[in-house]
Image: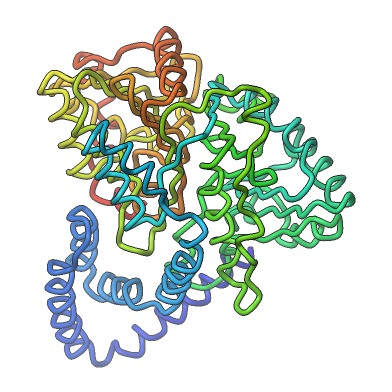
Length: 503
């Protein structure tokens, strides 16, 4: 209510300003048109995604004053620039603690120059190196992930880092919280960070203080405040758990009961996660610390204290560590679309197949082109989508792309038992991605995201096996199905595409 009240006050102020100018309407209109013309030139020459440009051009032309003022505000807001500069500074500071092993790059180059080039891009422009000596295990359901993290949390002796988009009280979170509180009392450095969007509905606004009373260091990323701010549009969508620097988890699973099917919201909830043990865990450790230290001016961590170089458990348990692993994060503020670049690289280099799971399908021209071109040149492109959606508008938008993709040869399946929340790519039995990155504008351009990229690693086969098992529970969508889809819903989907980049 505080947020809504604050926004209403600001809207009332704008309306009052307009009424003040009513006696000078002609001058005001001319000024608005001239300013909007200048802004249109600015938009056209801006180095951003063409779909973003279109999404701004429409409101600037239809409602010149509001559209123009909103665009100027979004581009010039000080908070966005401050956060971006801070993040870039932290990436520079932490880079020495996750150096690229040149021997790993040389070995990668002998196998594939293109793969080596991707690794060079990721280190140079995203800040994350490729690693070897890392064991990984894939979890095809949220329940499997939940069962796996409990013993890892119980084993913690030095630190536990957790960064999640959603946390909601229930069986899953209550179980985890009890362990975190107990570990904190034992002297373990326990840190928990969650996105501020949760404060609107899922947990109290002062929830961090409750956790701190238990000995848990807690932060709410970008708390929702009753002010107009584009920074609040950049949510922390990451899912990261790091234990003692030797084990890390990521994937699509948040900390709420629907993710482990203890609560049914949209039928059966299909989600995935992956565990890493070994050298690559350092990537997620540093990724967490970068976001944790955004507001820690002059009080930053000594990053070297959290990086491990020895992993005796890999030898003791004789765990397989073949292949290459590259954990990576994506920031919405640095003009480097790392998440999309990795997906495009997989699509453009695929030779036999690309199999995809995603809850949302809201595509720009580049992604649409890559998907259709891959299918047209004979690559088996399969996209697994939810049959029971969690957001009606997102489902209508996704449906608006179906016919175009199917005509090009892309195969679209819907998971009939319920909702797919998994985010995964797998290609040619050699490459796979498991993480938090959806195929929509928010994930690819507006959110803080993370994932793990695998090349010639045993986990790739596990991801593909899950794809095949999931397909057995899916129905294929045909062009006839697209034609039979309710005409009003089809129309709504196409209209929504005008505003998709801003949603």
